[in-house]
Image 1: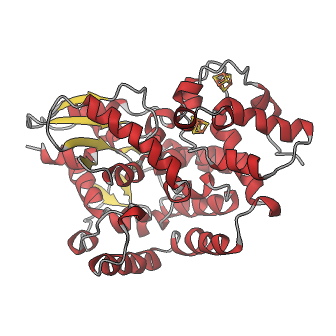
Image 2: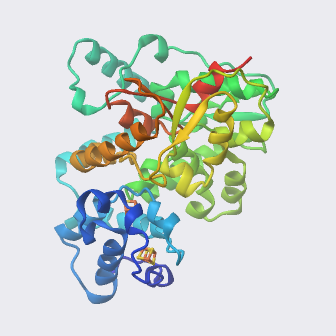
Length: 393
Ligand code: SF4
Ligand code: SF4
């Protein structure tokens, strides 16, 4: 059995261990197999030494948050994210490595049917809203409290837009208030802007790539590209979606996909580049949480700090951007590890706050991180777009 991994990428690791302190699963378990070095060694064993794809191997791969903190820290330039994506793709296609039938059916419904379908996703959202009102959704699910007034927000379009805001799937259904704020801040730069036509054809496919569902991810990427032809800028206010869309060139390997990816910017990158109006000083303190897909993958966390510093007293965590444990669907599948990683992150955030108040204001540019951290008492997690909008003149 081979994992079909690129040999150059696989042998690039020199086992120095410098990535270990940057790995959230290693930090909470202390286990070599839960470290980047251990995972790469396990991949090599399968690819070169005929080691079996057994439960231990599958577990080690599935426990990786795919935060890519290791990749950012690696002096040898090991493309860990790519290695893990390809490994997950092989696991997805290996009968013995697949989850049980019930889980497969739920995943099929979620990934194949609901996420790519706006209407179904909105219907499901209203069902969740109703279930929450009836007290039928346990808090341990970590879902944000849905409010009817947020679910019905209309997003206005300017004629002849210079930039589309990609609205996506879950974020469009659950966090339209963030999109509204993002559009308002984008307009404050003097630009004509609009939400992506037809939601940018809904899902970016990032969650699918993480889960090894590469064929579905490619199909979704083609749909997103087809929904926004031309050369209008594409702005993304979800760090995870932005990272996926900036990587369409590699995912699809076409000139068209490369050109599309080059049009994509994170929200803060774009508004800082365009030039924000003079913001009001709020006098409030905010701790900035750098989402992994903004910091380690897009390398675009700087503009968030730059923009928020215009109106807030900003502070940062002293953990080199260690992951919070959200990881797309990770927090659903790896409840205990995700919670343990989150506990460390919440502590780092509290330690970074200069205010001795009960509630710490936190800025996060990724909806998954915001939901995951928002479940921790005492953290008020907001998107940078919302915080900047509050400081507009
Ligand atoms: S992945 Fe990079 S940092 Fe980590 S052990 Fe290998 S070479 Fe060292
Ligand atoms: S991607 Fe994140 S969780 Fe996975 S091995 Fe690297 S640092 Fe650890």
